[in-house]
Length: 203
Image: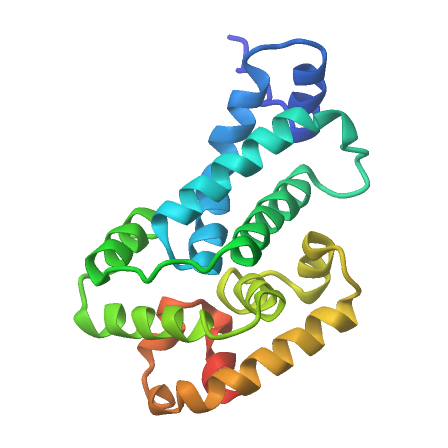
């Protein structure tokens, strides 16, 4: 009995897309939209804006597929596009405040969490605090502290040196520390953000 064929890599799908395969890009979207949505939601803090940013990013990726040179992974290339789409939206206009139930619903769609009010409260507070940061610091903190990217990977996504990512994260944490100081002893903060979320509490 023949074993099923190995799934195509992202790069192979992108090549097929450029060769005219009408289904290849759809497969790329299926593979990456959830994580791109998570990055956009945490960066913008608004489900509608995040959905629009992800849509803009995929349209841009579809049109610019020929620009992919294979110097980084396809996922890094896609995340660079979605982060840029988020930053463009943040620069063009202020993102409207998010209703509590809206953010909770979006967070549940993103990553299902136990139904614990405390965790939701912390998530809301972290999201609100992030909105107070400049766009470049917010993007760096979302990637490193909330999405678990290494500094080097975040640097690739943001197209800046690793040292710039470190300094942006350090400045962002310094600004968040007094805002979130009351959460210092809340262990659920790490579950809401990521294993690296503790850095938000510790400054």
